[in-house]
Length: 206
Image (cartoon, rainbow, N blue to C red; front, side, top):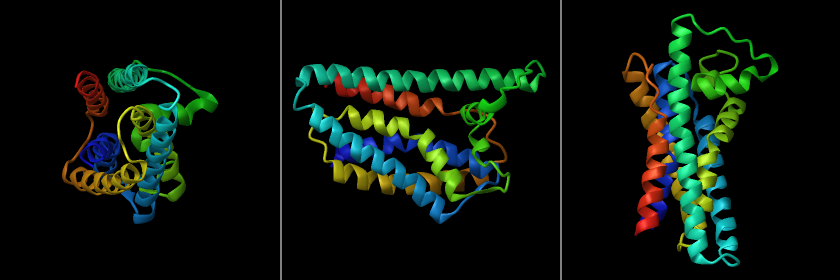
């Protein structure tokens, strides 16, 4: 169960960091919205773990080990680069050097650059629909981590349950921390990516 718990904590890092941003921006996450976010993460993690186990029946453990390492490293690296890009764009915007009208793709780009953009109606409360939208954008880590578990004895049901509870805890603790700090202007989303890379290396060499 230790492995399942560790994996669920890793996939909840992004949720925690986003909740910190929401809290510092005075955006409230209701119990229902928190349930939606953590449930989507848990379901995707559980289902991807099941799929991973099925794939392991037709792919050799050694090949699956390499594939899992590549997937986690790629997702982790992408998250780190995304964080760097968001920081670069934010600096240009603050200096008035960025002029960009994305048109119909605006909401996608906003969600990519700014976690608080998920509050589409600026109500300072994350509605169930907005929570679901955020959960889908944050589900990539859950899916990638679950798909990398095929060669190991990872229980999908236990993994999903742990992911559900760690997701709730991440939202609660992140929101609490966010409300206690005046601003979350720094982007720490790279932490989740770094954690995925670290786990991929550890899991590959052990």
